[in-house]
Image 1 (cartoon, rainbow, N blue to C red):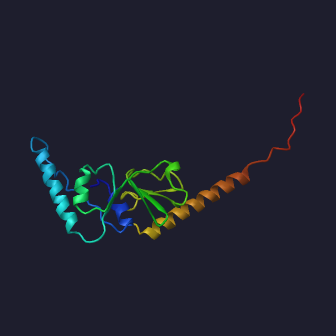
Image 2: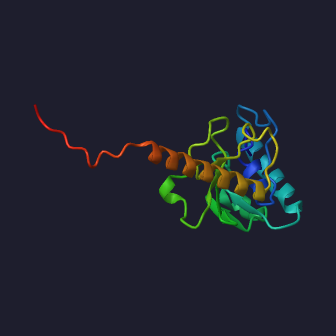
Length: 171
């Protein structure tokens, strides 16, 4: 499940479906375990009924035991995934964790917060006006961000004054 689209949007980039649980579906009180157990069975039944390959990039709202995901038909359960030179994850990863062959890290989780650098693309629903993004568009956005960052850095370097030949003499 995801509250702000941080599972649904990255899933859509992989051609997958991410689900959001119904609000207030889990009762609080003595019946909590029974409700969670029932939801797990509903989860398994729903996902088993869906055709196609099932892969999960685990997020902070994925609280079911791994056996439920396996029983539901998920072939792969990962913390991140490389797809068409994009490194997909639920949360932004440390810059050193982005593979060098990756164009960048497409992530969710931080919702309305601005992007954190040219190699990161935040695809939370608040950033995408609640619409999915095609993988080609994600690549184009990352390439644009990186081109702009390179231009800004080049402009900054050009505006610096070279003082390597300046001699300062005392009084």
